[in-house]
Amino acid sequence: MRKYLLYLASFLTLMFLVQDISYSGVMNLQYHFRKNARANETIVGGDGGLSGGNVSSFMISGNLLLKYVKDDHLVSIYGNASYGEQETKGVKYRISSSFTQQIRYHIPVITGDESWLELATFLQYQYDEFKRIKTRIANGIGPRPGVLLFDKKLEISGAVSYMFEYVRLDSATYSNSSGIHQYTDMGEGKVEHRLSNYINFGLSLSQGLNIFSTTFYQPLLTEFGDFRIFHDTSLYITPKGMSSLTIYMKFVWAHDSRPPDQVDATDYNFQSGIMVSVF
Image (cartoon, rainbow, N blue to C red; front, side, top):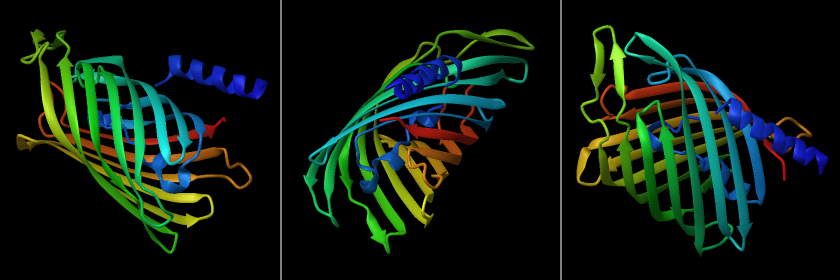
């Protein structure tokens, strides 16, 4: 029990000191929702890395994931927070932050060892200084089919979901060498309806060594020229005899075809970190 309290105290400390940017508003938890990863679990983790785009040089993160599984029903709660260095048009550096919470519920429709189908729904809240997002609320629902397994080494999965999204931007000013300016879209709020599509590729290289890749595509339903793309490729290493510990390295790339005023359209990040399953 003392060990678990120590883990919890360490994580709460980490949440105040460090924080994972949800690039393009995408929370990528697909690795934890694989069929062979279905188990009651509490996972805490932290990571850091070099960044480009709206994060100027570095970013550090803290993450918490709670999963509860019963009779093929899955409920998860996820939270993360991030700190990173941000540059304002080559003039001013400052430390900015973001925070995201998400709750998901997966409802079984067809169950089986080889073929299965579930209905997945989620609700997400986001605050992100890097992208000038004061409030973002997203709600999505859609079918999630089972994975295709090839010799138990390769897995492929994907899904198409509907996503309702409300976004309100900040109304602050920004400064550069020519003075203080107002954003052209300051304080703007809008409601959007998007598709949220993704495809996953997983490859087991050996016992405790896995590569997992996810690509999201989120077009606006009324105008497909307004879209977001997110890609994440990660290497996961679980040391022998330490099944509760995972070390990972990842590359993240994201693009928003129509970002807010003064926000870069493309972000990229190289991260490394650890995850610990504490319960």
